[in-house]
Amino acid sequence: MTLELNKIFFCTGARNHDLLKIFDQHDVRFEYDERMASFKALGLSKMTQTPVGICTTSGTAVAQCVPAMLEAYYSELPLVLISGDRPKKLHGTGSPQTIEHEMLTRSCRRSYLEIDSSELSQVDLNQLEFPVHINVLVDDTVPHNIDINFHKELKAYKNFIDKIKKPLFIFSHENMSMRPFIEKFAQSKLTFYAETLSGGHDLSPIKTEKKLIELFKAGFFDAVIRVGHTPLTKIWRLLEKSPLPVFHFDARNLPALSFGEVLPMNSDNLLKSDEFWRMTAQLLPYPVADETIWSLEELIQKYPEAEISYCDKLNQLIHSDDVVYLGNSLVIRFFELTQKKNLVVFGNRGVNGIDGQLASAIGLAMGTKKQVFCILGDVTTFYDLTSLRDMPENLKLIIMNNKGGRIFDMLKLDKRIVMEHEHDFKDIAFGLKLSYSQKISDFNQVQVLELSPDRAQSEAFLQEWVR
Image 1 (spheres, rainbow, N blue to C red):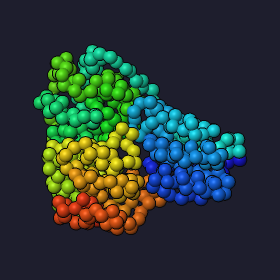
Image 2: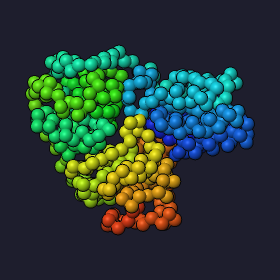
Image 3: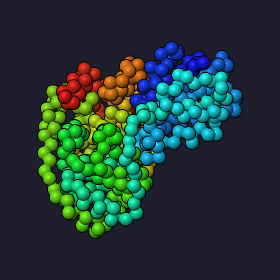
Image 4: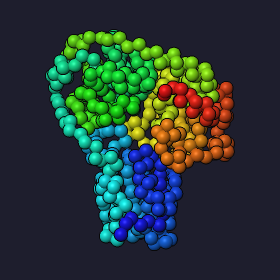
């Protein structure tokens, strides 16, 4: 007997995307919000008394299903949670969007399976007790033989750099700004890439991720040295497929990869360490010219209504003494790509969840008297609509409404998970008595600014940019 479900509420995500082909013979309904979708599944299960599935991507998406799973547990309902997960080798590493799924549902399930995606269609629900959590390890067959080595002394760093000549330094983010460390490091003239959440992107000699990837694929670097938490850049995922020696300075003591040397020190520890600077001084600088910044500016002029061009305009309008909160997905990538000035930038990149972004920005604004600009995509805003009723005066919400989850277009995934729509937030904003506009010229006059990039220009921009 194979997996039989009345209906599957499928919440869009890159990690569970490949499971769609397994559900070809099922009634699939696509959803944004895992918490609401799991309760819809619960209601259908309650009415029909048949197994109903909720399928999610990895990370906080699974946690959002816990309330419905708890209700199913105490109501004895046949709810089936199917979570797409990272390969086993990445568990416990702090790799992007990787958390411990099994732990999340211990108190609200009666059966748990951890299987490879090839085994999912053969699951016999008659042999299980409800509610059920099936954790599917996607791409778990990728071979990898490099070990993780944990260290306690900087001597390990010295041993590492003695063997390399052209490392790439990546500065990601920490719970506080890394700018003081990056300012001092920049004096070394060594090549580094500082992400926007580091607080030092404007100091980065490599200005765009495009240039970073070009250099990586060309074999320009012979090692990577990371300072901070798990990076956003695509390089971090490429390293799993094309590994280089990696040294991780991470206060969490996490490699964020399935391999590498790890030392639990943060940027402030390194800033104050004379030993670190003496060791690093043995590395010889090598020049990197980033010509991509000029082609980026040409494309912004050519496609003024593209999403990246809107991010460029926002970067110009926001002052250096303001605070920026960036949602996940395309917004944070495009904002980083066009950032040229010193800005204080925050975001939730611990496990990269799309949930609670506006609420997090509200909490941020409550802790400062400065102006806070929260920039979110439309799908991210849909996740957190209830937070709109509690907007502080010093918070401005900027919604980049590209009518769906366009990051899935960029990843060339099944068009169904983009979940295209024609909605806007005008009536919601007015209903909550929030000043609102769809014109970027009203940037300083309203609390909710909704921008709708031209889809054709956005696609043309990206086609020329990535080629």
